[in-house]
Length: 532
Image 1 (cartoon, one colour):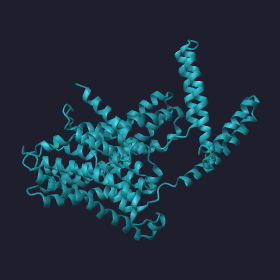
Image 2 (image 1 turned 90 degrees about the vertical axis):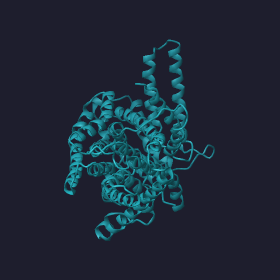
Image 3 (image 1 turned 135 degrees about the horizontal axis):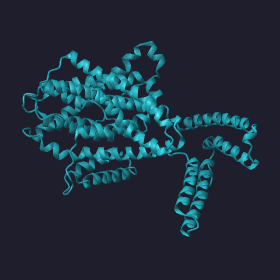
Image 4 (image 1 turned 90 degrees about the horizontal axis):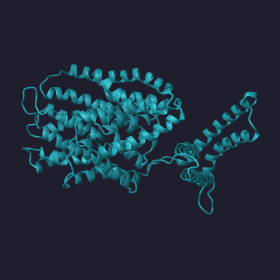
């Protein structure tokens, strides 16, 4: 097997995603656009999405990274809108878009139209996270969109299986379809609940960070495979496990957290970049398969289906936002909302690689040996809907947010809350230190005792200093200046260690040990910058 095309895909997509960070256009849109162009560049290999690769090998880690960074408490607080979108909307869109396609396309069977509806019903988890990070949506809107995208794939895949069984002639009654859906949902959650505690126990009892991170990389695949083995939803199993582990990540030692954050950030970056590039690269394959449908005719259907997808989402989102608020209990429990929040939620329904992967898994033949009705057209309409939502909605969403003047994250309030939390924690740590120092077994020379107190005071004051005045010469806060000077001092030490290694005064192993200590100190001195 030639690995060069795969290496080329990963390298090229990562390079484009890295360069896109310097532009105002989100990286997914650059990757899709260049994938569309690259598909017709001579010498570029043919890349075809395979559902047997995308669903079990790419979807679990992408879902895991999105879920483990989500807030279980925020999702629980917004469970009603998340459930209405991830389950109610997907089923509604499957039926509504399927029925409209059935009425629009001559000779398209209703069962095949419902397959199309299920395929393009779910907004994409990767797209939602990537766009939301870049646009800077309000916290509650971001939570709802991310929560929806974590669960809706499970709903769509189950709806697809039911519609497909009817389309290929295997036959499935409404009762059997509901049973299939309940088995997938309850089974997926059940598998996740069964796995999450022993997996967390393993993470906390493995003593080596390397082994812990190896386990971390295996977890999404284990959860997905275990659920699928019993015909349950692997998507839900991965999400349940990831939410639990993310909620309890503080119980894992610091070395594991440092390594795990770096490893998963790299994995997510590589997979997301490759996935969006793959979407664009499917264009020649989709066009070649149109068969009896003329391009102009197929484009007319594509525009109509795209408009239907957009309109149907708004038809669901506004009533789902306001009708439950007729209940006084819900109004008291949930924050007030205006028309702008559902507008953003409605417009942020970008589709992605999961829809394409499901579409490519449609069989060529029915159970009678006949060609699957309009399979090529379903693939084309799925592709154009994915591209249309990514390009049109993805490009205009930042503009819409600016026009609506939505309140973004209140950085000042967040910093104040961080400072208050740090102050309370430092007070507890100070009391703990004084209690420990009364024990003779903990006796230390005065300089070391003072150093412990100085480090504690430094942590207490660092966040408050970010709220203070800036340096009139440099514009830096005291905290920024401190971190810059600390970095300069650490760099001076690092240069000495390298020089001593080059002079053979110390060996490479000792140099690496000394540099790791400096790296940890530098990590403590510098607060993590937000993703751009």
